[in-house]
Length: 95
Image 1: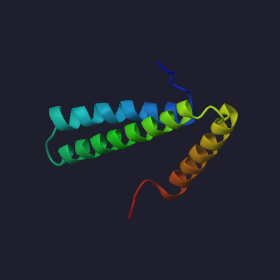
Image 2: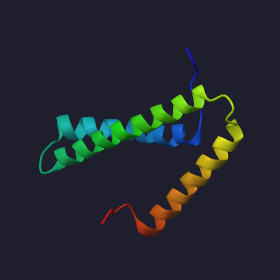
Image 3: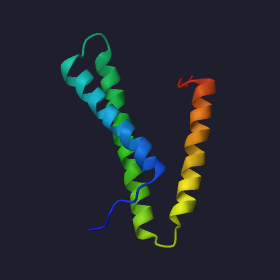
């Protein structure tokens, strides 16, 4: 069995995965009145997309031995910082 490689994406998206799972469970099954079920559905879709991203990332990192761990940390940290700055300036809205 191959072990999981710890990366910034795994840490941040892993935390978001847990939050999205609980949000989807709560808003789809427990409190689904007044449009909250749509929020649960969107949270579940986000959960699935983040899971696919993590599986692809881990499969690439496990199968490619020539990729340096330090370069992955630097690149992913820069991407996450740029994403955080973009969200702080523009917010999360799409439209």
